[in-house]
Length: 103
Image (cartoon, rainbow, N blue to C red; front, top):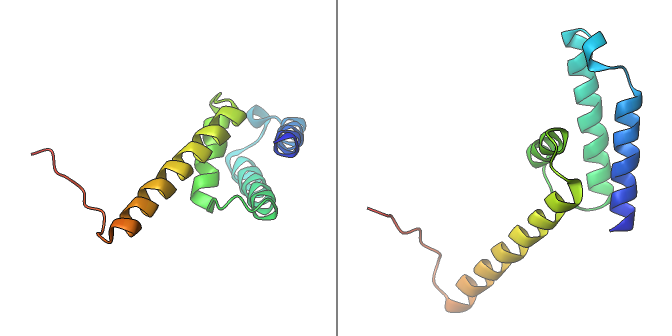
């Protein structure tokens, strides 16, 4: 947890120290965003988070919008645990999960 927080802090500081978005043109902003996502993806792979690039993009946008990174990580852990519990329950019952319609 401390390692994740420290890596997040370093990533954020690196990002903030870069060129200010208001002084960049659209292609520079796009290039910076691609570089940032590539860096986040590499860190994610090193930490074996299991998040795909789309999920990482969503997470970074949420953090940029002001969501607390540790709270977001906790939510992701909770959702994974719940998903695993539902999956285990379904596999132990021998029946596939079904989605009920509210009609």
